[in-house]
Length: 340
Image (cartoon, rainbow, N blue to C red; front, side, top):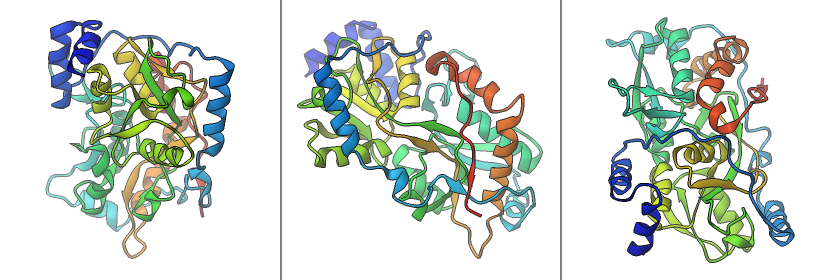
C-alpha cells in the first residue's frame, strides 16, 4: 500500500506533494491551479445499467418526511434569541464552518492574512450583517463534519453554515433554514480509474466518506442493496478522503457533487464519475431547535436568504466568484419552501 501511495503521489508532485498531503490533515488547504468543469465520464452500457440499478435501489431520503427542506416562513422581527446574541459582551455571531473545503470555506495559504473565504463564508457574513449591522461581526469556529449537530446542541455555535444537507433524520436534532444550494451524492476517483459511478465498477474497491455525512448514509443503504464496495474507511472531515485518495489508501471518494467538483479543481488528476448525482439533496443553515417557541433566529435567517437570493450582490455573485469555475453556469438558487 505504501508503494502504491508513493507512486500516485509522484504523478502530482512527489515529495513536495507528500508534504502538502500531510499538511492537509493538519487543516491546511491544498490550492492548485483551477481546473474547468469535471470531464465527461466514460462508461459502457453494462456499467450504465448497473448504475441505474443502484440509483433505483437508493433510498429517497428527501421523501421520507413531508418536504424536509421546508422551513418556517421568513420574518425580520427580533426575538429573544436574536436579542441574546446582540446583548453579548462581545457582539459576534458564532458560526460553525469548514476551513478545508476549497471554494466553500477555506484559508488560502497564498494570501498573507489567510482569512476564511468561500461561498458558505459569504453567506455567514451576510447573516451577521443583517443581525448585527456589521458583516465582520462574526466569529468562525471550524467544526468537523461529524461534530456539526453536537456543536449546535451544546451552544458552541449559533448556527452551522457548512455544506450541511437537510435530512429528515437531522431535523429531529436541529432546525434548518430554507435550502440555499442543490446538490447530490457523486463518486470522485482518479481519471485513470476504471470506476464509472455508482455501479458494479465499485465492487471490491475501497471507498472513503466522512463520518456523520449523508454520503456514508447512502453508501450504507446501497451496501444493503448489493453494492460490492468496501465502505469501511471513514474520516472526521470530508477533505481527509481526498488525502487518502491521493495517498492511494482508497480507490474512490463519495461526497456531495458540489464538494467533489471543488476537490477536482484542487487536484486535476481526479474527476467526478457518473453522468449525474445519485440523488437530490439541499444545503441549509442549521440552528438549535427553538426553546419555548423562540423561533426568531430561524425565521430571520430565512428572511436573509429571501433577500440574498434576489440581490444583485447576493447568491449569484457569490456563486460566480467561488463555484462557477468548478461547477459551471448555475440555474440559480433553489426556490424556498415554507411549512407555515
